[in-house]
Amino acid sequence: MAKISTIDLHQLTQDIKRWGQELGFQQVAISDVDLGEHEQHLENWLSNQYHGEMDYMERHGTKRSRPNELEPGTLSVITVRMDYLPENIHTISILKQKDKAYISRYALGRDYHKLIRKRLTKLAKTIESAIGPFGHRAFVDSAPVLEKALAEKSGLGWIGKNSLLLNKQAGSWYFLGELFVDLSLPTDPPVKNHCGSCRSCLDKCPTQAIVSPYQVDSRRCISYLTIELKNAIPEEFRKSMGNRVFGCDDCQLVCPWNRFANDTQENDFHPRHELDNQDLLALFLWDETTFLSNTEGSAIRRIGYERWQRNLAIGLGNAPFSPQIVDALERKRDSVSDMVKEHIDWALHQHSLNLSQDV
Image (cartoon, rainbow, N blue to C red):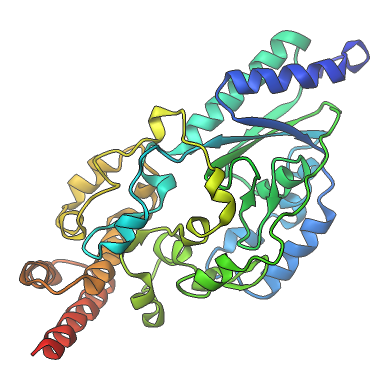
């Protein structure tokens, strides 16, 4: 542990923010570890079963909301954010082209977890070179951490009605990361909530997953359905999914504050394999080897090939009728798991309905 008595903590805090920005973070701030209000919000959310199959959200007791229990000795948390939206990216236009695959913008490039964790580790080493050894641990959406709560407390933004962190100068198209430290650093003040009377995210959610301001029922959320849910997607949500095959950005797309979002400076977050403009059918025709090759180092790989096919089958069921789509669905039907077969059958049924209506 560093010798606190010999350190100018105010100067160190300013240095940390400068070092963080030099490492590519757009903003660096400091939070304390008191998350009592957010702990109650989490408990209420869990009691409503809004976490669905995400059992990990209720594990670890209070470690998620009490940083010094997760990492003993933690006195402050250095919070960071990094923009991820590529410039000139197709977004609304892809959603409107029903034969295209819409993939959440955060997942188009390289998986952010390792990149940001490496930068946080470099930040810790820079601090250590200045003050000597100290206790620290980096987190990037990888452990029981209330990252949005910590970011809100540190003033990086406010948690909006869609449950995402919003920033007046940057919207919400950014990743968050945390560095737990055993230094009692001067904290930054939180910012005011600027959602006001706006209801855009609630009104425009395709599946009405934002059941009330600041409350998201994950069981209805397309991001949850396409990424977290391991089994069949409930039929009631399939039409509403449209061509969204990995995640959903609708509540960000309609948020007025995202008019101020900034393009990413990280080349690793730029689209790979033209995933920002791919046909649903082309992706559905990938075999597992191609899927694994084209998703190496990508957040998409975590759902696996089976769920990838499941999601694409729904997208194809919602696409305009074409003989090529029907042929591809029929040809793949006998070589897939029962779960995927269920979604292929649903898609084929949608096309049979569309065809009968056109006759």
